[in-house]
Length: 306
Image (cartoon, rainbow, N blue to C red):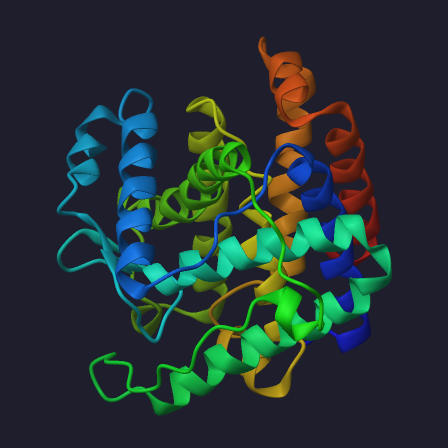
């Protein structure tokens, strides 16, 4: 389903509102050298594995949480990948770095709401940069373009933000939440016995994506984490799908990012009111974030409710 750029921008801003509420208790560290990014990403993934290990079902699937099966690679021509042949999950460190920058941008917009439209323009820059990397990557997924990531404050001609040591620690926890949603999704493909896109129909492929999303939402929640920081990934997907090249790349294999967000957040809101510890979860993310999640679902209902 091809979406309009205007609708994509409105949805990205709606997700921004949710992230801004959550980010009231967090702020990102700087994106430093490539090796530092890789090391930080590995530490984050190790925390995700630790959180998932007691709750991953079926128990026979715990073998997938071996650190040699969930790998951080420097960069690649994909966002995250389920290797069906070798039963592995591959996460590019640069993908994680972009998420750090999004959280930093979110905080800046929280301080200066007038920058919202510039933030959407910056998301477009991120997606165009990723599409360029896809186009210039050599066969086998080796990336040959290493143009630097421009942080939002620089893109918006703002002074650099000061990030206190306390907030750097807090953001590390938020990054675990964000990475958990991605890892959970890719694990879902492996645990549920999904097949590669080339072997199945478009309809089956899209159903698999929804199933992996549901698996991730359930696993993240049972692990005591939250899906909220992970919504940052979908901001980029939404903007990408509204472009001619980005929409074509995912339109046949993936449902629209808006509708994936709609289903996950709707399920998460239902969990808050139905499970025993739902109120504890709400207290963790904040009452204001719960209200913003509901507003996000309401804004997507006409487009995605089926």
